Image (cartoon, rainbow, N blue to C red; front, side, top):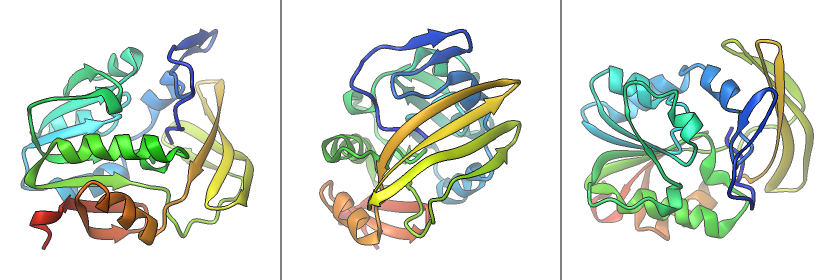
Length: 230
């Protein structure tokens, strides 16, 4: 889960390794497994070729897609995250600053980035996605499941233990919590605040960028430029 970016524009490092400007511990993110998210993405991008992965992180999805034969451009602001990518083409940039004349058959905006608590930031992220998709392409969003019950708990994602702590949903749809990642005897706490987007709010956000939702299924949304909505 990528948190909304902090105001600072620098990275910092403690004895456990690099933590990116949005608070993401690089070592933990690099250890997260591609599944089950990869299978969902593959289902949606089947038959397409050029893919733009915005906020690609350590290449959890971008690298397997490239390995499967897709032409993948992986964009992330963290050089340390991108340093883990071995198959996709890495490019260092903040999503909101990314500009390219190239257009893509599918644009990915995963890891709940669309749930940023800052409306202006959400607009910027969706604007980048919408402006880089071909007319008959798709934008694949991963949001916080609007039906999710946010409670403290623990789960294992591959070798990474993930604990949800200090949950506060008293200002719903804004939720605050801390995610603790533990791997190889090390732990990182990543505080975050996000806005849960139900189908109506998601539809409005997409419409602001001339995108039409083809499918909204829990955490997953697939949209296309509105002029090509079917």
